[in-house]
Structures are given as C-alpha cells and as structure tokens.
Image 1 (spheres, rainbow, N blue to C red):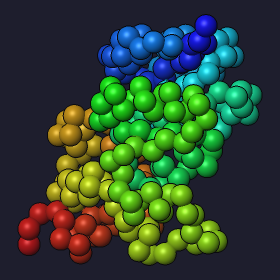
Image 2: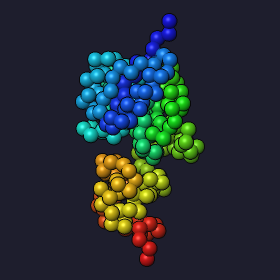
Image 3: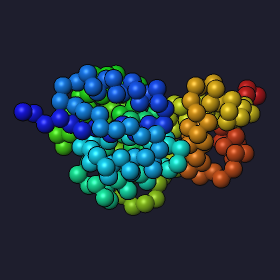
Image 4: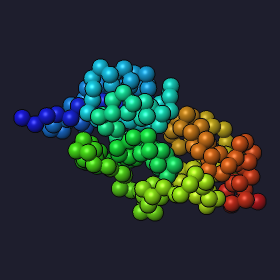
Amino acid sequence: MDERIKILIVDDHPILRRGLVTVIRAQRGMEVVGEAGTAEETIRLCRETAPDLIILDLSLPDRDGLELIREIKSFCPATRILVLTVHDDESYIRKALAEGGNGYLLKRAVDVELTLAIRAVARGEMVLDPSLTRELLQGVLSPPPGRRRSEKSRGRLSSRQKEVLDMIARGYTDKQIAEQFQISVKTVESHKARLKEKLNASRRSELVQYALKNGLGPPG
C-alpha cells in the first residue's frame, strides 16, 4: 500500500487555503493534515502532525516566511518545504533555498504544476517555477563570489517591483497601490523593503529620485 504524502498548508488567506485543500484532496496519495494562517500556528501544527511537506506562503502576518523556514528545519529537518508565493525576484528565491526550502512556485502556477511539484519535492527533488527565466535561475543556483553585490545585481528589479516603484514616484499611498494591484498592504510594504535593499535606499524620497532618473513616475 502506498504511503500518503502528509501536507500542511500555510497561507494567511483562508480562501486560497481552501482552494489548495480541494486540489490536494482530489489527488491520489496526498493528505492534508492541517491548515495554518500564521507562523505560530504553523510551528504548533508542525510539531503535532509531523508533515512530510509544507506548502508555505512567505507573507505571514506574524513573522517573516524566510525565518520560519529556518526555524522549521531546526526542529523538523525531514519535513520538506515548497514555497508558494507572489514574490518572483531573485533575492527571495535565493534566500528561501538557502534557508532550507526544497521548492519555489509562484501563485500563478496551475493545479497540475502544483501537484507535480508536490510529488517531486516529496521524492527529494528540487523544484523551481517553470516561468522563471534561465538567467534568473542561473543567478539563483550560482551564488556570486563574496558577499558584495554589484550595482547591476542590486538594480535588477522584477516587473512588479518596477510597477510599485512607478506608483510610489507618482505619489500613491501603500493602500492605493495595494488596491491597484489587488494585493495586501503588507505585500506592498514587502516590495518597498526589497526595493530599498536593491537600490541601497533608506527613504521613500530616494526611491522617487531613482524612479525619476530611470524614466518612471509622472512624465516631465
């Protein structure tokens, strides 16, 4: 008799969790052993259910998802972690894998891609979203020598980061940006934090200056 893959789903959006539960329960050889919307719930359920695999969103209300990966691996090293997130820039992917993640999918992945990824990660394979470019994958899988990052690397922005930066330069608030892209304010704040890190900026005004110099923001 085949053993079932015990799966814990972690995402702070109940509707998305329900969708994942429906997809997984329709698959042979998979079992959902729990759902969590916070890092605290995740740690408790992980200890209680000892899942084979965790599907993890990086944007949680009480803790950074990257830190959570490291903590889970510290007390449950056999549990495999498949990140399912909206973050598509290299720094997130690199850190997720460095902390112990076993796979990285974007939330636009279709059901078939997700279930195939679950089975692959459960077998011990590494999975990365097929929509990621070859150049991006090479950057993730081949870390640059030393800790210093070049200006070119720091300035490489994802398409969503450019869109957020454009709206920042146009004077939109975080709430307005969130409404425009139908994402949470927390996700906008996360994009801003990554922009500041990549562009070596500490203030919003510095982000605006960079945007204007690079053809973003209001014309003229």
